[in-house]
Image (cartoon, rainbow, N blue to C red):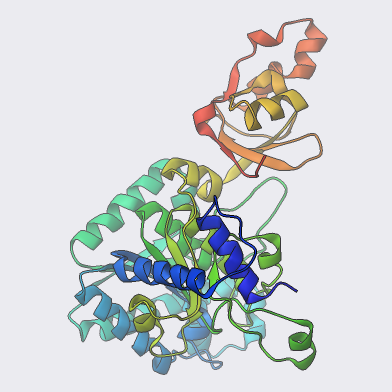
Length: 420
């Protein structure tokens, strides 16, 4: 079992790439902690997500005991001239409570949407009253998947939130569950990958679009927990992992499924943290039920699990990798795979073995190898029907030449998804 100390070794190894490390010294741990504290103390633009388990109680009513300290801490951050965006869950839960419905009734999609319609106005009314005590104006920003998957709408969203922040307004973001089901329904199909299916990932995409410095995910646990066999047998919680610099399969194995009241769980928080890391920012998963959590985080104190910045991926490439709705899927041959992953080449239509899902020009497509493993994504220059005309199979059948094949995805619009 790899210990917390060895995870810190992995973090240090990521930062000090040219050092061979066989043990984590007190000095190296101190350096990492100093870097975490520096990044959070200096963060000027932050995105804070508060989950359903923090916003509401078991009865579906708003939990002022937990929400008021979060509001007070955000007000203090804004007083320090930091720009804050709040992503808040809780509308469905509040609506359920207001309508007096049992939790089992939420298995019906339309009922969930009706609860969201009722609960969203209740949620904003609470925030308006609480933030007005501090003289802070708020703005409601309800989003659907299309606001991220369409590049033009994504850019418009960025500009709108930027303007609100410039006015000193606090944008409060949530998914528009009344008209969108992306956060309410099962998320994955073979032909379509949604931009987000929970507010954790939504918060990370907002952070990515705004080039924010920090993402804080407030939940009902103290952070990412180390689990041992003894912990599992006894039912006791493991220790909090203080620092993570790379989200490995082993780190992912520590993530549990969705929470009882929420949609995400630790798995989606890890996904959101990885996006934040690729933005060149820092992410923190921490307990939102403790009243001093936000104050401690931005004072640089050790709390929760911090995910240190990785190599920054440029904005449009992040959009392709994480936000864009993947519409199509193409299988490529070994030569095209090598050219893309090793030669940094564009994808020619002649390298396509087959088109598995239809797409239009300017759609984002999934690029997979002959065994069906996705290794890249990109923006298609032409529709699937045209691409098939110049595929390797068609060219061979017609006796044509591969060098006459058009480019399906240019190199600057391709993002690799795995190490090669």
